[in-house]
Length: 113
Length: 110
Image 1 (cartoon, chains in turn blue, cyan):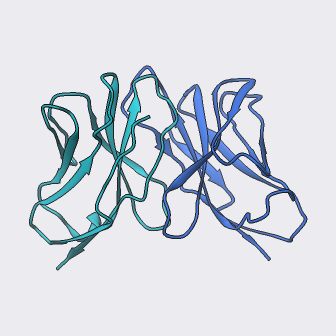
Image 2 (cartoon, helix red, strand yellow; image 1 turned 135 degrees about the horizontal axis):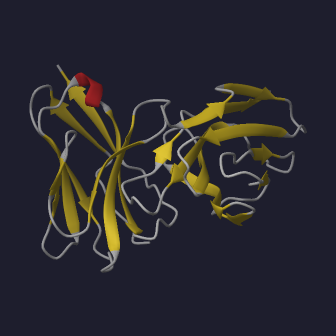
């Protein structure tokens, strides 16, 4: 079945460490997105990529970095510069040719200890 | 993208229809109305979208007013599994990044 896989589901990080969240899709979608969600809040856009080897900052990109070397993969690195990284992270993909909605992964819950 | 306004929460009786309103008074002509829902600790799930006409699928119906300034998502026979946060989003057809507001927290009660 086609879909988006995020791993790991739970991740613990020590303060000052970088950590990379994985997002893989086999939907052949060009566009991919990373969102952050804090408890009781909506989703906020971190980074997005509409094509391989290209990506743009979203609303809250500071302290994060991404790469898009392959169509299927859009990893997110949470760097030590991110002051409050504990959150639920969601990856999504989208095919503009269909226009019937974004597909989301099941999320990664990151906790800084 | 246009901003949307939704009530923060609402309750619904199991088996009854749930009508979820959304205001999007600044919507522009080429922007679609999307609805997603998010069950606790999961990724959002696409429900339905529309431009001008009312739409129906196996999950829900979407009623868009003639002036397109508001819409209503209808869950015809709510079940306990429909308990979730429902997001109304307005976005251009080019697949621009979605902006999620606070949504409506729907609690379906037995």
